[in-house]
Length: 107
Picture 1 (cartoon, helix red, strand yellow):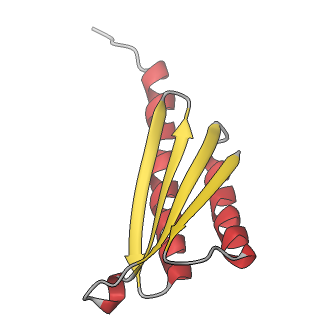
Picture 2 (tube, one colour; picture 1 turned 90 degrees about the vertical axis):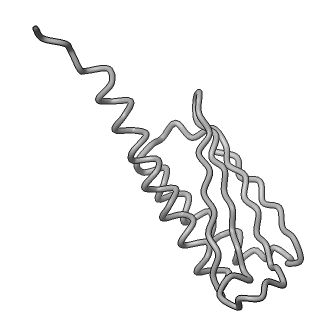
């Protein structure tokens, strides 16, 4: 899986990159057909201090894109939150795919 990380108003450190890669490894455990992912790490000057750090991730799957974003006072916590959101969405997508192919209409 290719991971592309962009940032706004923050420099991406190797620790941030490895933290994000470790989180996305959890997503790949559930669904191995992830083609690539792009992440944006943001530090804004929002009025609410809890929303100043943000993370957005888009995962490209075969035939579908899944997007999630999260904001928090701590950038690492925002990355954890967005990975958790993606994990739930990927599990739901996987269940939809598996259930869709096995349902039969019985009359």
